[in-house]
Length: 283
Image (cartoon, rainbow, N blue to C red; front, side, top):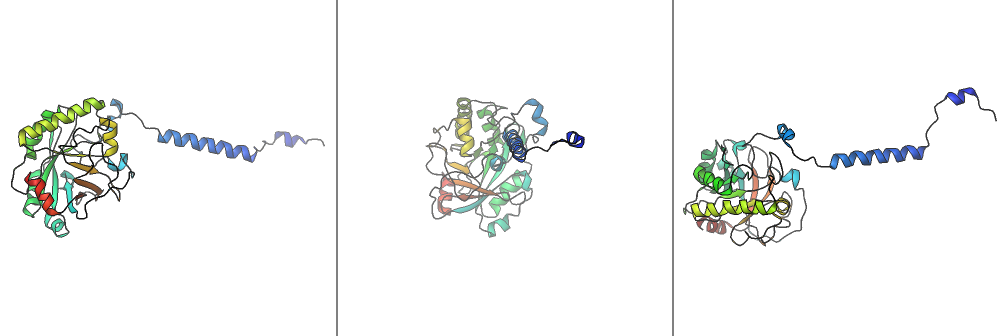
């Protein structure tokens, strides 16, 4: 059958199976590129938040997701919150009436930042009847662990045996300003943490609480187990169960289980009744 000239000029229609294959390959390539993490570099720093703006659990949702195996907790648990400058003036009486019995307030970060609301938040929780403590957001890439421990103690992170003051907490987690592990190898990170914890105990007589997330701990410390026998664990995981704990700890003292936004801070559970919480405060 002769072919009309118009047929020669008409664009040929691709086979439907070929179109489908091309679409699948294009989508796969796009998803692969989107999933590939971009390493932090000096050129990326304009996208990071300003120094001092970090708060407890800042990286949990972004980096940790929901995973892990369920673990047993004590039947009785005691509700708590942690706050930073984001919460400003907190209505502590409302929180107390809702069942919150303890609180941690951000005291410092690195050696360059102190929380301008610290005194109001720290004393306000105490005046409402809560057992309270302070935490330090660690930046291991700026100064030594001992230097930051001293800065923390000098800016609200101390401890006294008054029955209502919890030992200070070291918030060691994802770096919001750059490299996830602050440019340190696992052994160097462990050494930095040890330096902080040793100096904190030297200054206060108490072993600091360690706040972290299991996935970060595995990646940045090599899942080091050496602090479990001395330092209470405050685990961060926004899920219905605590999940897997870092190596060495077979029990968590505190669990940050959700973030409730800038008004009331993050919510936590102490793994025991109020009298056990008081025992931790008493040392």
